[in-house]
Length: 481
Image 1: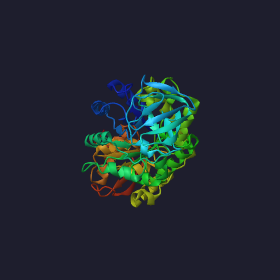
Image 2 (image 1 turned 120 degrees about the vertical axis):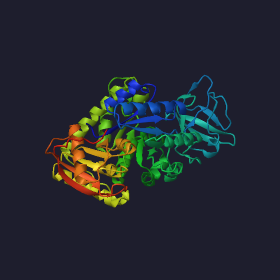
Image 3 (image 1 turned 90 degrees about the horizontal axis):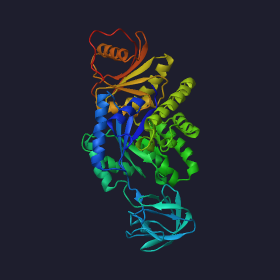
Image 4 (image 1 turned 60 degrees about the horizontal axis):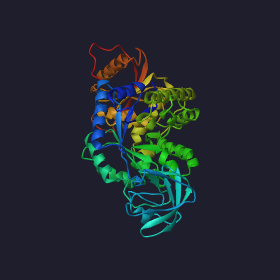
């Protein structure tokens, strides 16, 4: 059982019940639905299919809804595309026109006002680079500096321009409202630039909704406001695709390490994503460089590693998940041999008692060579912080709330189990023994550490550590899944 969590993007290659079941069996912990493609009706159908597959397989896998964000794209082009050579001059118009080698338009007419002379415009993830030579009221005169091909609907990145726009489009608002109402486990926000963007999305949540928000770091503005974004988010995703277009590509590995380090200190889960096993979109195995990339992301304290095209449209989705799992297993073996644990900055988490309990649990489990750690949690906060301590032993997260169990699917090293808790300590421990023995996680006589709160119904009340020897269970067994 690996500790690193695997996120698989669902698409045409994997949206059937059979494929989803295969992904679960291969080790997927979170299913990502990319709302940049398809209709809300299509996503709703797949969303409920995932839930049904998880129910049939007694799995607490989570669903992450990924909003499209304000992606700027090229309008329709005659013949769908055209080649462009270095040195070629052409115009970007404010009005919508059918594109040609001499002029194109975009889905954002205001771009002509917001982009200035000298600014770069990158098209199709930077495969084409043009620079603005002249700015007019109706158009921008540009010169191509890196040639390639411009096609309909290809994306534009404007790393030098300060666009006045919300990170939420009207479609995003509709999709986010649907996700909150239907109980998505995570909602990811694209092109986050500051904490205010996340606050705008959080303000849309209905009453009694506490859906965790994932901040995708993929713009130069996000790097400038990184600490405030981490504080305002619940999870951070290192989106290396657009980040590598917006920033100097050579800086991306350093930025990745820095983001992961800050998330570790703040006790926030971190996802590393984009082209991790890109060659497996069309090939049955990964390259050496890709294997090293995934391993290094895990060594740098990624809680999750994500597959995108590999599982959404790739020819070998199950093989890609298996490869990711194998890499994680080998890498975690190295981490276990090193025997190092991590610490979370208590001041950054704003949960001083829970953070202290997490640190003490890690220390106690290591000192006593405990077989595993069991923790009870009402909202998942203790599980999240304990996962960041990187214990070299399993952590079983218990909660009576199914949604909290799915939330814990994102946390490194946490095995979520839905289970009701008895009020009396001895009865609670007997239930824990029964569950662990039935799942073959322990043997009678094993020493375990149990983390719990004395105030059962109060969130944030984790305040007790119990050192416990597993006993023979009583005749009656608790209800757990």
